[in-house]
Structures are given as structure tokens and as C-alpha cells.
Image 1 (cartoon, rainbow, N blue to C red):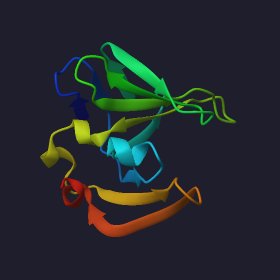
Image 2: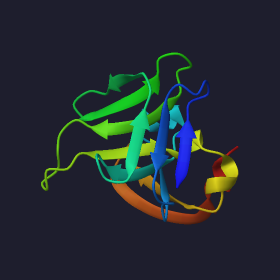
Image 3: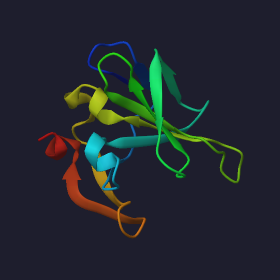
Image 4: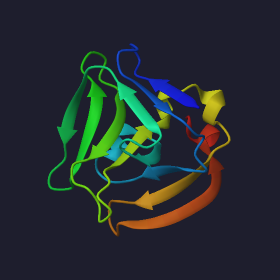
Length: 130
């Protein structure tokens, strides 16, 4: 199980498994947040807690949840269900301890121009800390 929290510890998440990969997206919001996302669905293997505020970006249908005190982005939730009736969610792996996720491969997603999966480039989370 992975656990993460914002800087002040008020907003927390638990992810019941270690993901096989994380995603680095270059869209106008994710590149500013610097997030590395691990995906799930509401009510599946992810638990979140704490007083988070939500920022909704345009018509994309995602609510980005951040700590109202320290401002760290902790997770996001889809605002609309998918075709199977599930709401996608993702936790920001930068909120966990580096050693716990250091060797997880990073996939890249072009959310800026083409909205396409670019796949891995051989780097892992440890390569993305700086």
C-alpha cells in the first residue's frame, strides 16, 4: 500500500497497490502542478481524506483536489462517469515518500497538443524528482 499527503498533512490518500506505471502529462494544468498520476476509480482501491478544495478546469470534466491550507495538489476525480458508470480518479505520487515509488516507470501523455499516450521513455519516478 502507498500513502501520500500534502505538505502540512491535512489531505491524505491511500492507494492499496503499487501501480505498474505513473503518468506525466504536459497539459496546461498538469505541467504546472508537476504531478505524477497513478490512476484508479472512485470506490475501488483509493481512499482520500481531509479538507480539500477543488479546482475544475474548463469543460474537461476533472476536479483537481488540493489542500486548502498548504496548496498541494493531492488527487483528482472525474466529474462524470465513464461508459461503465465509474468515475476515474488519480493520486499524485509526488505526495508519497520518494523511496516507496522510486522505481515505478513513467509514461508520458501529450495532453497539450494531440491528447495521445506517448508511452515510456525508460525513466522511472526517481529520475523525475528534480
